[in-house]
Image 1 (cartoon, helix red, strand yellow):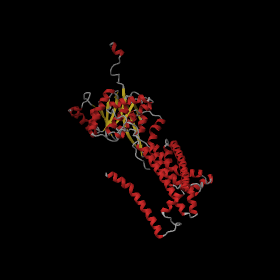
Image 2 (cartoon, rainbow over the protein chains, first blue to last red):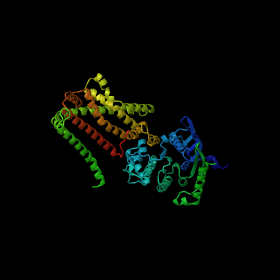
Image 3 (tube, chains in turn brown, yellow):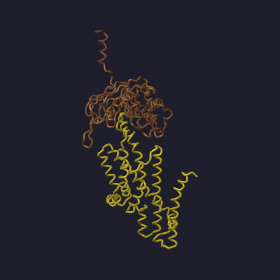
Length: 271
Length: 259
């Protein structure tokens, strides 16, 4: 046994720091007296800084899982972990950013004040939070729109504002619930690219829910395929494509092969 | 002329034309059939009488208008207080919404004689009955606004907002269009309630009391003159409410809400 193995434990024992984890997570709802299993025995480990997508049919519990991580829903049993701690602690420590399906902006607030909202809640000074918000707006390509109201922006621009807002507290974990679902294909691909660049720069752990197979493959290190009734994880597919991703990769045979594999898993539910 | 401008012109001119025709016909029938002033005076005579007695009538309008305003302000305060108190509790909120709905359906103005038992036929009694009439309406609007659920609630939870921040940054702005629309609806109703309550009894220096008095003495011309001023007060209340709503909502790009 060499000196070095004594000071540093063997690599197999050191698990990478946890970005997000679900350990034996179950979640049941009671609807009209009938028990509905939204999530059954979900086990998932996502390392810090990893980009993982969830794809699955309606009712597979993907949004439920995201809401559990966001501390918006309790589990029935099992342990959710966010950035190494419980969802509640992570939320209270402002380590979480959430982007919702709709941009979910305050229509009465300017773009700048929408982005600054989480910082305002934290009690950051007006000058400080507006400086941060302006920088974030620049990053998402909305410089010059600070004073606009949300309704004056297109759907894609509104979703950019929502992303800037989610990033305002410099979160370690970014939870995104079908953020580009309502956008047209061209805008969606452009925002995919921008999201990739933001992720490369800030490197948060990202959990990204989508209905689009190409989007999931393009963005992710891994894709979690889920099935419904009961909601469960079918398989986790590795995306072995080099980083950073470029738009040409969408046409590569490897890309199509992974797409086909996910499509097959979705169709068969893993059987 | 652009089609939009033409539409606007028609929208303004057509009701004016209709009113002029209606009053012209009225005038004509009175003159041709030689109908007695006691039964129905001609519009021209009514206007002349209204102008002649404008000093006294304006005094009554001011008094009635003041009662309506004080009653409205009292109702707004009570409604805001009650709605803020219970909006956080789901059971109480649905109970409150039910009671408010029932209260709007009931002719609460008939409670006026009951109020006078406690307060006498005073101005205070009129103000109290106006407030009683308006509270179900205003409370319903405020409560609906304060209990609106949206994804912003989830956002504020994730951002770690405390109760006060959720209330002041989301609840109140969400409720604002409802409160403003409630006010707009309540303004003319406050005037109507004031006149009806005064009619039943109250200070004699009011529109409602004056109308009752003139009707009782068959002073038809004075009765109609008072009605003209009552209508003017009602229109004023409507216009003020409409301007208030436009001013408050246009800035935010909201549209008025209907309940």
